[in-house]
Image (tube, rainbow, N blue to C red; front, side):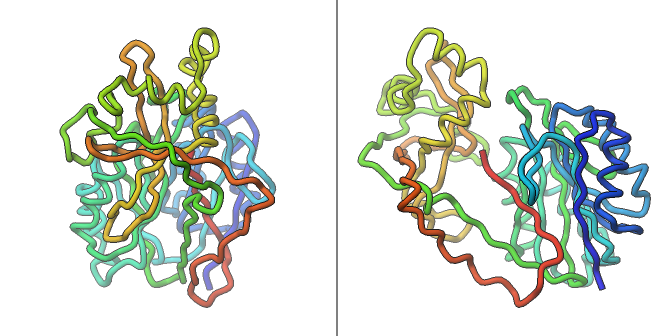
Length: 334
């Protein structure tokens, strides 16, 4: 029978933090580890310590900005979700999704069947391309995962692997039949409601229609993007705007409360009524704005507003396989 456990440490010494997190998880002989740490740690040292302390475990993870999520709250530090489930998880790493998927296929355990799901870890800007590439090798397999984060969008995020902390690339975990697996996702529709405020994207960077182009929007309604967004977000001018430009985490907190989305999208074979496109950075000199998802000319963006708490009615979760969960992994979008 598979066993699992979660451990966390706020110790600032990376080696001691890893030891304490592993001890707290309480899974001797772990065969697989999902690991993470906030980016204010010595990430490379944390990664190396997990590899050293868990010599028989395959490993995958990403850095987190701000906090590690756990049942007791959200706190900066080092965390791990450990499994003793031989033959149930297989990891791979590549410079892109195609290389990682090809590496995964080299494992004889994966060759013998189709994974129940694939858990993906990568860095900002690579998600869509990686998912498309993985889908070529594993058509129909569900893909879940998270993106490495940092506190200032300065590229200090890392993907954590058995081969060390990586500046980029794609790390994969194939979930095989040795464990039962279920997943669900809430996209914020129960928390926000659309408004009548909308505009059309008219100019972006990158190749139009490409998977990675369009994350920087230059014009909305044929005007500099920032002309529109400053009014929508209430960015203001002077010191207030300078503060938000120089402190991306504060900007993301503000824009998450006033999310933008595209409407009536076809995404990975599914009809999505509203697809969130959170703003990540503002460029007051170029009058542009960057987003966590690509936008293309002609797409309309809608401004949404937070529902009042008294109106919230939690929706039912999608049905999961009949099981008693032994572990859960949560990803939260900015």
